[in-house]
Length: 337
Image 1 (cartoon, rainbow, N blue to C red):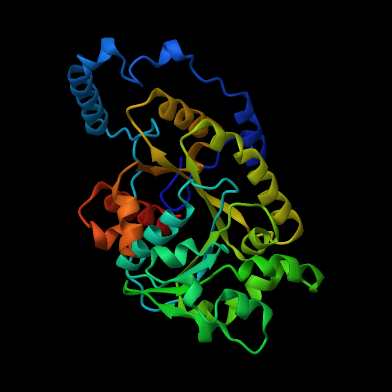
Image 2 (cartoon, rainbow, N blue to C red):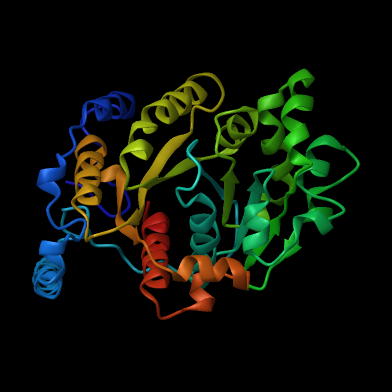
């Protein structure tokens, strides 16, 4: 029986579970009646929405979440007497547009609400994490690139405060794209990020690394430095198929570079409860990975693009929204694991 602090592991290995996803069968268009409105269904849309809402309410009353499982009991996060040493979490998926950056920002803010000190590391040359926190990457004189490549630059010289109390940022910009090439000739190149983070590990409780959408050297650096990996997975078939390659990379890093690395959890994002496709992908992921999948599911909402423009997390931009509640629930799950 699983406990909140030790979620049960799936019966199969992560690699074999991911490989089985390639055999997923998705319903035919005829079986998706109701996903897309037609002339025959538009007039009955209201009745269908009402029935769907009633069914959803019944499931919530029974304690069944979007994953199809009962919600697990998650305790209130205990207060901390002191900070550090930090747990490093890599937010990783080689497919772009699955919610890595959004989840990094909002999970970090939610962890800070729980009294944790958080460092967010923008490890993507596009600098989306920095932009999402109201910082313009092209205006920065020093970034994570300078800390990695210049021994004279310390991480404390580059870390910046954010608008969120308890959350700091190690920013990035396009300069970081050169690091992947320059690091190839370095000795111990896979451990570069770990070396950079060591001086501040005792200052934080969590370090969240927003990885670029690839499985290159920068991502391997993040996995080598990490204690755990959170995999944001869009509830869409192409995103699901790419998980096998990501799991294979994680297992290679475990074997050769970082034996303590583990998958903290798989986070279902961009979930649309109105479509059968989202539900089918969710069911296959839960079937393959079991309790590794977080109970928390991030639904599609217009609030997330708004927060990017505002340059702040959803927990402060729309604190009473469903998205803010979801990331607070995710923070509790992460702390419990």
